[in-house]
Image 1 (cartoon, rainbow over the protein chains, first blue to last red):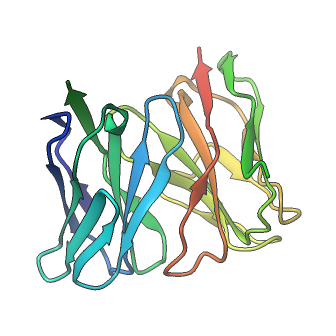
Image 2 (image 1 turned 90 degrees about the vertical axis):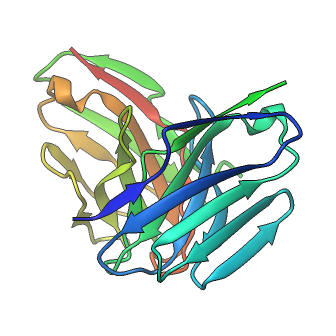
Length: 109
Length: 114
């Protein structure tokens, strides 16, 4: 079966750095996505990785290792508004997105 | 530009009733999707459409039907609602349904079936 694993919840301090991990086992791989979802709102796109390595976009970076079935999202200089759930999703061989359950990130002052 | 709109925002429905969730996008995207999101689970694909006139089944299609008469609209119908269909429903769209496509989500419909 297909599986995406992420930690259920993480806590970090304002101004700090946090790394959210995602491991996957899917039938085929056509890219990995990270989305942010604030409580009660829709998911919004953060990043896309299809090749191994690090993609940096402002305070957010995303890393992919296809051989290890592993990705992480790195958030720097945390702000209170970063409190949200972070969803990892993999596009499989049928071009459909398989989603993890999400990691709820709690930022403390 | 509205992006994707969904209606209603929320609904309480008696079991056995028929219900249609509406989804409209103004981005001229070819592909559209319906997901449900339940606590502790990832988003699960119900149905999708890669282009107007075509639809396909996702991971959890039973009890749901869709139609895609034009590019902009993609309604989801529950023919006879059951309590297990209580969930938050998200409609999404993407330009082409291809490998590098990013999906954009509507605000969601919170549905409670009693």
